[in-house]
Length: 410
Image (cartoon, one colour):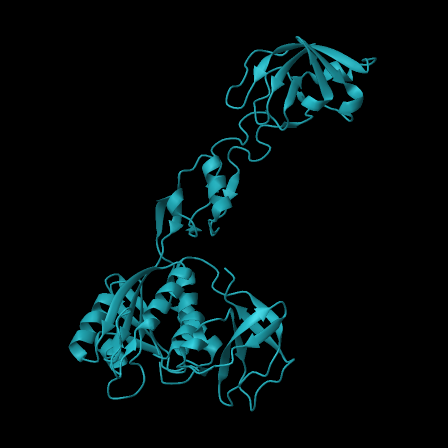
């Protein structure tokens, strides 16, 4: 592709067109949270597996209380108990009642449960007050077998995201594993002679490699497993070796060294490794120099994102382009939720390209962070939304309606 500068939506389409769904793997349920089902799953048994009581009380034959001319207080003989986990198998005959607890199996012969508070027990004689029972019919306070899930019913469709409730449903219906699309392995490499590791004390002219930490957590939040390649120096051979290691992952992210200076070696090194340029720039502030490449890995071409080194540029371009790729690789929806909001203060615009402004959203109002400088670390902290403002002259005034990309959503 040429050096033509794309807009944000065009660049996203180019990325998504080159991202492949990852193969499916079988995972134990306790390791499948957040993964996407690669095939539908069905119930292996009824749920509940038998008729069960929904109330502490007495399992009875409903005909005893519904018989024409039945007295206001019906007397029944007590016959044992059915407790949760300890079902009673003996038949309940007309004129008998069995003590039953919530969740316990309704014994054979019984077809209804009378609540404990509607009865009085004197020795082995149970008295049921029909007036207190109220409306009554077969199935009273009984959850029928299979009423929640019938054997063979589809529990979850292909493409379902496994949250806590979904995992509980699968486990309760006979599944200990699920076939899901695996998590993408993302290699992250920060470049630059000025960088020192997190925890080191920077000397004159040096900065902490905080972008790597930020990008790693953005990747994990998107569902990826992170391979930290550390810091590569502005030296061709060491950079080449680090990039080669990164191309063994499912997706490679580099940060820094992507502009046009004498020490910006990332793009030519990737091209030298067989990479094919897809796009070189996006009409975007911050993050215009973002570069997208496909490069050969062990299993075929993999997507490579070369992000600018300024913190806001790296943060925004990851959010707009890398995160969608990672989500698509897992079979998940890639777009963040959006909300129409009104600006509480004026927001800066760029006359030539879209300006993505970091902001705080409360209800239907958005407050841009006061510092929108791409190189300022403060500009990537304390926000929960991105406002994509179209190119234009002068700032948008307070009260203007804009679309907010909500970062706190799934």
